Length: 291
Image (cartoon, rainbow, N blue to C red):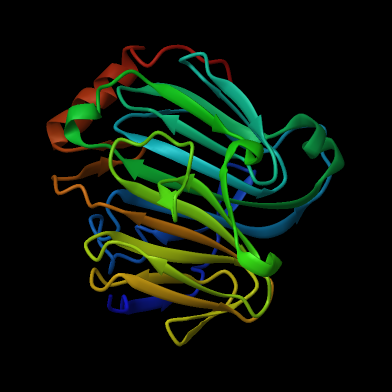
């Protein structure tokens, strides 16, 4: 096997607020140089780096808004997040948990800091990823997967060097619980300082790492905390050496080679489908959800 080449190591872009509860760095689609197809099937990645929220009686978050044509994957590292949608799904995730919402044909949803976390305040850190759906599944019924930390696949490394938590895909025989529409590998690596780990991922997949905590040497290049490592579609191996105790998100997936039409909260294949989504939203076909 050959080493997968690093294309860029990207420092966190200036943060912006999504609603009043999510202070995020927008790595994908990024500054325009990456392009909307570059990390297919992953279309958007917002990273809420570690921040302290003060106590409040009014939970911060994002009010009711629509989605169609893709999935939102929310990974909680610190803090607690609540979710409600117009398809009747709701849940609360805390540290280590994942919400995997399939918007598909369309729904309304809202996401906000869980009530008790809001009242206490504290550290908050999360990632939200938009995963595109292939055309044949964009109008499927909405669905929801609440993946608790307890139910994730866990591959423990020898000599207590750490653990690979498998959200989706398969790491050395340990499978993740997430159901996906296209092949996706999504892991949290939790590595002790000094640990060396080799990942083997298909050369043709879109692949990136996000350094959540600590720092690491990745294929001989230094990768600091809060940085995004984008790989070329070549080679299969990624060699990671943790300089400090580290948490690293791994994203790798088979590209969806279809046209992309994106507008706000809609991700379709043709502009006519975007116009239809707007019309359906305006005529109430996404359901009802109180703000």
